[in-house]
Amino acid sequence: MNGITSGFGTWNPIAWTLLFIGILIVAFFVRSFGRKDYKRNTGQTKAFLSGNEEPDAPAGLHVSGDNLYWGMVHGLSAYYKRVRKWHSGDLSDYVAWFIGGLALIFVIIVWVG
Image (cartoon, rainbow, N blue to C red; front, side, top):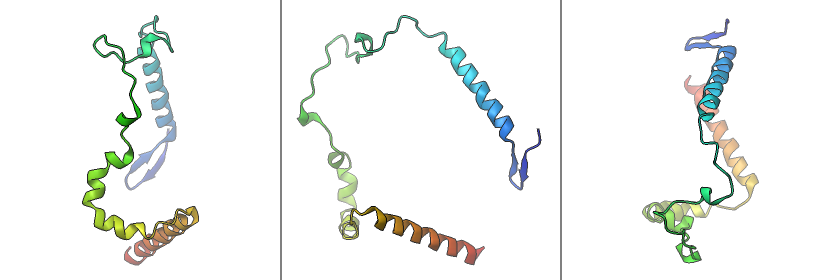
């Protein structure tokens, strides 16, 4: 089983594939010891809250992303105020920025190394 050898080691796709298949076999073997009486889409799938019924959550209990990241956004508000002006919502603008960034990284790598 010869692989591809580089300065950092050897890459052998056949060995990695055999290892992955072996891990899958072990995983299915361990899974076979699981409970046979489990039924999907029944009461067994409900969360257990110390024997109490799961309450119906009103919309007011929903935590949105704005609330979840409030501290980070508030702490970086000066940055977000400047960056929000660049936000257009157009995917082609973001792709252009991505390609431009990759080109800049490529130029730096070629120039330095």
